[in-house]
Image (tube, rainbow, N blue to C red; front, top):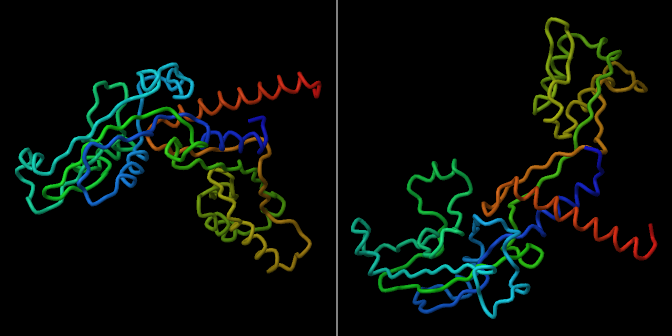
Length: 295
């Protein structure tokens, strides 16, 4: 409420590019006898979302940390040590000639402060049917993969692996008005057809009052089907100069966001973090403007 599209779009862009998360930045290989090159595996590891139990504001960026290399304030270490022949001993039901999946659940780490997000939600976990998480690579007989991965704090503006969301959709609030004078000229069948034309159920037909009501304006997707039908009725009656029975406009100060995260942060955390960053940006602009006597 009480804003405009420029502020809403700024918030959307910050959610995508400037909300910090953890992601694997450095991979040190000890052994890789798989058919996939080191660079490809490192890229896949970087895209595995990591969830931190520590608030992101308490993590330091690597370039801001006082440590010489890595420490618990700026880095988190994960290891992966998988050998097909050794793993086959613990999985007797697995067929020896079939490749073995190495997933995010095969990571080892000393602390539970950070953990890979194997599924995006509890509902997806329930639907997994024994799935072991995000597949990194498949090992064949005689193959092994040993590596150490270091996760660090970053933002999507630096690299896409730090983006906390899959998508952020911004939608205008719909302002829908019915012209009662014109609507009274519609017969019952035309009113019901008007209601049926909307694919998302914005309108309902009141049989007792024989009228149409805007019952769910939030669901409007601006498809204009109701407007097209109103134009058809107007042309059929040859009232070319008359107004339409429906008037739809965009609200100038109310918007709806749909935030879908990768799992590294919750949608609530993404929104709150983006609001803090937007507030900080506006304060810096205000300070700079006051210094230059612009405002």
